[in-house]
Amino acid sequence: MQFPLSFADMTLWLAIMSIILLATSELISPYYGRTNLLVEEGRLRAVALTVGIMFILSILVQIYLMAPF
Image 1 (cartoon, rainbow, N blue to C red):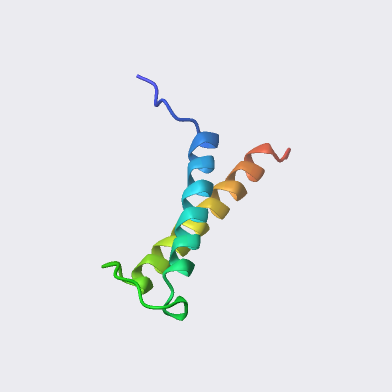
Image 2 (image 1 turned 30 degrees about the horizontal axis):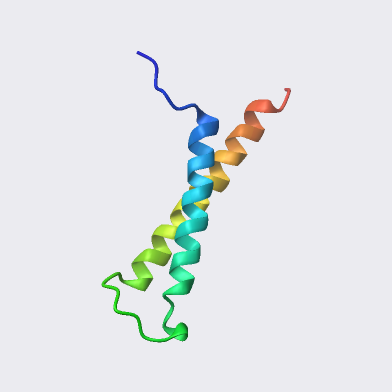
């Protein structure tokens, strides 16, 4: 049985999720006023940065796989 998503599909998913999470973490920042969300801003920002780093690492893996040695 083959996994239905390729590495490029997962990289695209990571890119979209990192953009959404980073934008959300900035929009619910305490500098923009009081929000009634029950999400911890610090934890959301940590998850957003983690997903962003995973995206950058996946791009580096793709570059490494394309490089001729």
